[in-house]
Amino acid sequence: MTDPQIALTMLGIFIACVFLGFPIAYTLMAIGLGFGYYAYFDAARMWRSFNRLTEDAGWWDSTSLWLEGFYNNRIFDLFINQTYSVISNEVLTAIPLFLFMGYIVERANIVDKLFSTLALASRNIPGSLGVAALITCALFATATGIVGAVVTLMGLLALPQMLKMRYDHSFAAGIICAGGTLGILIPPSIMLIVYAASSGVSIVRLYAAALLPGLVLVGLYITYIVVRSILNPKLAPKPTKEELPEVPTGKMLWMLATSFLPLAILILSVLGSILFGLATPTEAASIGALGGMVLAIAYRAMTFDRLRESVYLTVRTTAMVCWLFVGSYVFSAVFSYLGGEQVIAEFVTHLDLTPIQFLIIAQLIIFLLGWPLEWSEIIIIFVPIFLPLLPMFGIDPLFFGVLVALNLQTSFLTPPMAMSAYYLKGIAPPQVKLLEIFKGVLPYCGMVVIAMLLMYTFPQIVFSLPDAVYGPQR
Image (cartoon, rainbow, N blue to C red; front, top):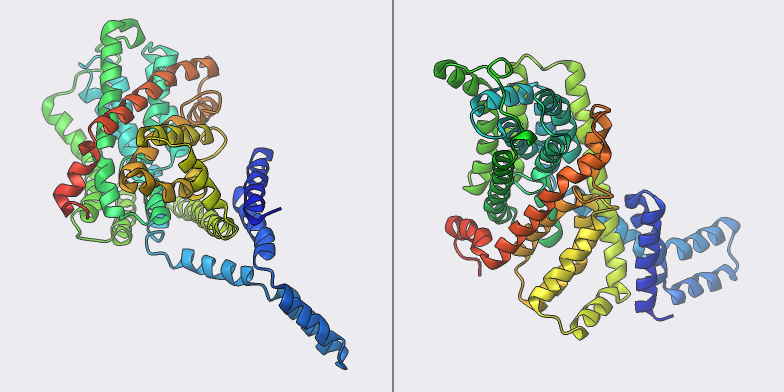
């Protein structure tokens, strides 16, 4: 077999291992080290070591020489260097800090107060509880970036309230599942940090580029909720005064000041300090982590057990992402060394695709990968395969990254592997069936596609804010 054929075999073995359920980070490292030992194998050096064994040397010297010949392979140096590069990556340093902020906010009971207040404030809007749930999901998802945490918590808080007020099961479930995925797209998104580290794109420009598309998607979701509620009031009956009483304006403002404003100020402070160059992402994440602790203390929700849980979950998630990076870097380095990337590039070139055809194929592949894989694995492992092809089609990696972030919304919403639906089903009342949840999330997949089409038709949705703040990119 030629080296490129071995590289493709390497990729095929990895995909097979993924579908068999092997841990992905360790699979990447094992396959990378195994095939890398072959790729960097120095037969001449091994033969010299073997010849020296035949000389008059003691047992210890002979054993040392044999081990030197066996272990003296550059793949081990590559593994050590790639591990160090991940640990020392300043962009990735922001991940544990943002995670810690999210986990602390999750345990401070802020979300409960926020949803209750927004439900009262929007009581006269059609589908008011749905709108309140979606806005709460968007804010909480922005603070955490962890889909499972948002869907689970909002499923416990908002879903029982909507069912109590006679909301259709599918309609209510779809709102929570769709809202819970918004943290992948809206800054300060951890997914965008990972993409920036993988692609070399400026994280501040990426945050600015993703902000308007994220707001567009939220606007589409809210429009859908309101219009469906107007066209079919049975989906979201208007609450009675007994179910959701009116609150005087003064008291409502006070409630908003104690629930909505603290979290909004925290998020805007973190995001604004990054976008306007007042702080690096790591410094802003530090501010967010500190602010999350201050909010938890202010709400009297900070206990040692909650702090310990937040630290543990932060370390566990960060370790998963970082080891994925290590495994991916080793795997991709060996894959490229064997000529795998060149084979893929030549194959795509011979297809004679237009830029729009390439984008459709790339996004379709990412969409399908979203069924068995998490977003972190897609961004770290598979997106880098497409990145070297972007210059061939004149596609800006900034634009491609935001498009991928939008696309990954559907990976959590599309049956039969819609993880958001399974997160919600795990904590939903028994009368809410999985098929009803699947039915509820499908319209939001359509709105994601609409948002992607809007982005392609009007690319200034992506480029206008980063160009206005930082100037056009050369």
